[in-house]
Length: 474
Image (cartoon, rainbow, N blue to C red; front, side, top):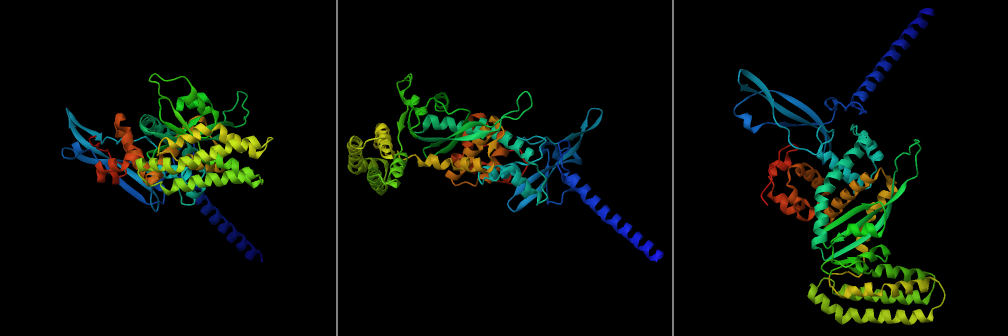
């Protein structure tokens, strides 16, 4: 009995040691791959597929002898999954006075020197968050299941850095182009929470409220801008130098653009109203069974039905048809509003709808001045959906700087959708190309012009993950 008991205890100890040894091995492997604040993850030990790219020096290839490599590792994402990019920098033995020396090939320029992520991985993270609404903590969980160890703080740093670089260069050029050349801008704004810094005593404070503006510039760009306050001063700074039509809601922050001090050349912004906003007030009155609401809805519906019939006509023909068919209906609508406003008493939803139409009559009538003006401002409201989805999914932005970076990324992704581009491929290629691109030609990288610009680039260089780009002539 004792012998059998001793043998059982020995087997139990050996089995436990084997189990603990295996667990220790798994723990050691996890520690080697897990990123920390002090050490990079050891990607050379990763089980992900390896993509090896050599970085040679064309000038030394024909005159010097290769003697080795310097390998560096980056996370890279391609359609189908994650991989590890092995950037193999070639070392050469060169003859110098008095002997030989070792020279490494020059490194291609990048926005993320000595970084952990390749531009393709950064583009994937940007699209996952700002196009699909996946917060960083959930994306971290998804990637961990694929043996990709990128923590959310690392993602935040890359998002802020990429957005800051794109905003200061490419998106800034898009803004300047929109203000200088667009005939019609449609704008709207929504709020967002910003995580505040800790107070001097180390206590956390409540989130503050910031604001995102969106601007749809003709059919060229969809732009976003972050401001700390929704004020007239912020609007003046945002639209400084613009003198075309600005379609917006009835917020008084835009009044300063049309009724403020005249410009040097006497030109100013012309505010255009939104019949969709007007219709909402009549809808609220209609569902509460006010006859004014029902008749107002029917009249506005007739405006849309008539305007839709010749929406695809050339501008000159559309202006002619609007004068002949839409203008009489708008005249009848406002004549009815003036009559109904006299007969309806009190303060209720009906008088609210009539009051909005009366106050906005000059701005609402302005759609008849230019055939390119739509009846409503819903295109800018639709572009704000991504901001609202993000407000539900990640609740707040880490700082004002992070919100400004997010605005630049939102602008590029929305503009890619406008011009039917794959945003992930576009961001990957632009992030690699941007360090080589001349500052005076940043607008050529905008989604509107990307098709023509990409056709001029070397197709082989676009396919190689790490390369020194050749900038084509303008």
